[in-house]
Amino acid sequence: METLEKIKSQINENSILLYMKGSPKIPNCGFSSQASQALIQCGQPFAFIDILLNPDIRTELPKYADWPTFPQLWIDGELIGGCDIILEMHQQGELKPLVDAATKRTETETETETETQ
Image 1: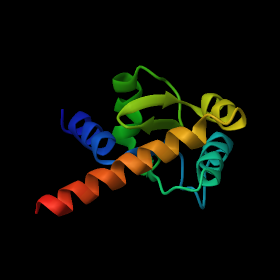
Image 2 (image 1 turned 90 degrees about the vertical axis):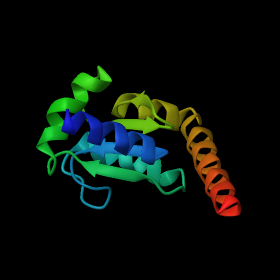
Image 3 (image 1 turned 120 degrees about the vertical axis):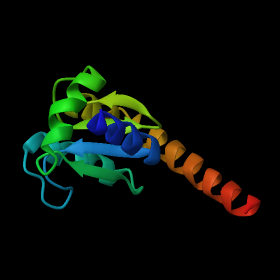
């Protein structure tokens, strides 16, 4: 259960999270490269997890997500999909507004937390 808890925590702590092979700067797979480039073009920061360095996550995440392949994009705790879906959303202009909204929600939550402390 430790790996499952780690996955849930990563998804909850990062409003935009890409599970990929490699990193955005040095992707180790063409699909991960395309997905990360689409996110980079949205112009907002995002978190990523290199599943090649985390074999436990690579094994367990497909079961948790009910999605067998990588990369996997999660926004606001919800699975958006893999490379094909990410690219399609990007090409249709649907990805950037989703990414922008998640970033804005995160910034608003951070401001609210700071004000209440």
